[in-house]
Image (cartoon, rainbow, N blue to C red; front, side, top):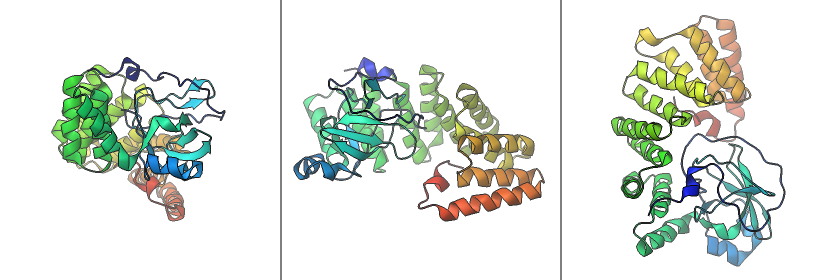
Amino acid sequence: MRLPEEMRHAAWRPLAAPAPAERPIWRSASRIGIALFLAAPGFSIAQQQGEGSWLGRRVVQKSSDFALRIEDQIVDRRRFILFYRVEKVNGPWLWLNDEGKGVSGWVKADQVVAFEEANSFFSERIRANREDAFAYVMRAAIYQERKQLDSALVDYAVAIKLDPTHAWVYNNRGIAWTDKDEYDKAIADYTRAIAIDPDGAEVLYRRGLAWREMKQYAKAIADFELPVRANPRLDEAYAADAWLRITCPDPTYRDAKRAVESAMRACKLMDWKDPYALSTLAAAYTAAQDFTSASHWHKVAAELAAGAKDDKNRTRVKR
C-alpha cells in the first residue's frame, strides 16, 4: 500500500470540526519527514484523568489525516519530523507546540496516541495490514527517537520497499545511518532524497555534514552553499559552513572572511540568541585576526550559555 497522496504536500486534509482560534507562529523545522509528536504518559491514562492530564505531555499522530489547525487554516508542517508538546487544552482540542521551532496549532485529542503506547498502536496496524507503509514509517521514527536504530532501519527498509517515492523517508533513514556513523549509507539515502525532491535544502545540509565526516571537504562546502540558496533562512547551513571554513584540517578550504559572513548570517537568523552561533562567530573573527570582535562575541556567547536552562541551544547545530 502506497503512502497517502496527501502526505506528498505541505497542507494535509482538514479536520471536520473547527478548531479554536490562536495566532499561528510560523517557522519550518530542520528534519524532513512525517510530523512526529513524541510523548510521555499514555493516551488512555490522559482520557481517564481528564483534560488537565494532557498539559505538558508529548504525543504521536495516529494517521495521515492528522493536521494542526488555526481556526479554518491548516498549519504548514512541510513534511518535517516535528516534536510537539501539549501546551493548552480546550475541551477535545489540544494546542501543540514543537518545542521552540515555531509551528503550533490545534488538533483533536483522538488524533494522537501517547509515546509509550505508540509502538504497540502501530504494531497492531502492521499486524492487521502488512502493506501499511505509513505505520512502518511511524514505528521506525519511534524506534529512532528511542535510539533503537537497527529496528528503525528495518522498518524504514520495509516502508521504502512498499513505497519508494517519498524523499523524507530516505532522509529519515539517512539520519539513522548518520547516527550510526555509517556516513556512506547516509549519503546514499540523502542523495536519493535529493533526486526525488531537489528543493530539499535541509537534506543537502545533512548530506554536507556526512561529507564532512568523510573528509570530503569540497563536497561538504558545496552542499552547505546550495541549501542557503534554496532556503536563505536555513541557519544551520550557514553555521556549519562557517565552522568548516574555520576548522577544516585541509587549509585549502579555510576562509576566515567567508566564515565571518556565514556566521553573521546564522546569528542574525537566530536573533543573536544562540550561544553556538555566537561562539562560531567569535571563532571566525579570531581566524580573521579581529581579536576585539572575537572577544566581544565570545563574552556574549558565554553569558547566553551560562544563562540557558538546558543544553538545547548549545547542541542544536551539529559541528
